[in-house]
Image (cartoon, rainbow, N blue to C red; front, side, top):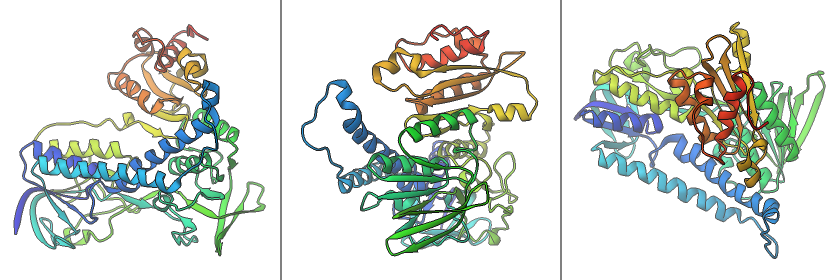
Length: 466
């Protein structure tokens, strides 16, 4: 039986990053993955493949709707080759997961393919290709999450599908109905709307992206309606029934009336649940809470001293970059260091177009907490770079403490916001004031100038270009 300093169960962004950092810090490390490819949900059926399809569908939409504005005429009909598009997506996935294989070899990490389950607090049984048993002084659980479902919905994975199946459809839907107006549903909904499908979004809450700042939800809703999405807010889905190649959804609106929607595909995107199936946590005595999450302390340590848990199986946002931070955190903790994570400064991003990104507190949260604040907002359409590129939708909004001017939250929607949010995180990590940001030189012309202008707007309402 092989013995290790650390064994990691799960090879998603949290798990593989934890393994790499442990190895860098001199620990003999193993990683166990039940699937044949490393990378977890994110790399295989989540973040990476969805971004590949978003990119491809964006190119198609640009070619069919916007190239003409730029003086680019393409003779003949522009067609979608969905098979080739899905094939490119898979090539991106294969290259990315192959990169994780390389990183494991580079860092001398032993990889075991199979289902890892606890035999006791220091022994892991592996069932599958690399069947056997290993011993580890410290164990990190990083088994991620799976798509959630509603109790009355039967997922046949053909017409009633999750995000996993939506990434490999063999045809463009005529009418895709999306249950859930969160990140996953909106991103995949936009992919297929661009490719020609009718798309209906059915959301239980009164707005899409209900956990983000309301102004972002309102702006994206406006953009989606302009793109002829059918947006059904405040609708409670009651039943989903497949009849041949048709799916019928019955939902109750806020007046209590039953509404019916028919389509050929139904994407169920109502969140994700922690995935701990098959771990045999009882054998190690690891406690879980009533939400199915593994309970941890401030050091991400479970109730069993040598077992830690990170990522989607513990509380907090289910984000790949949050899991990565936690993976590094645990590795450095095991090495005797004193790392830190400020969970308030883990950014959230929606990769629609326009992109949506945020960090820190929303206006709703500040109001609920009774914190006095001031807000500065700047529209992208007032920027020269946005006009030059033709991406005019959206804004940057900065919320700062009314007395101290410290930035408390930054919320943005527009072109390249997924990248722009990093500046906001840096500023807030160093507790910048709105005036600090307003006095930093931002290159012209760039989308980033909206950050400076929003900071000026939050500092005595002195934006220059609006």
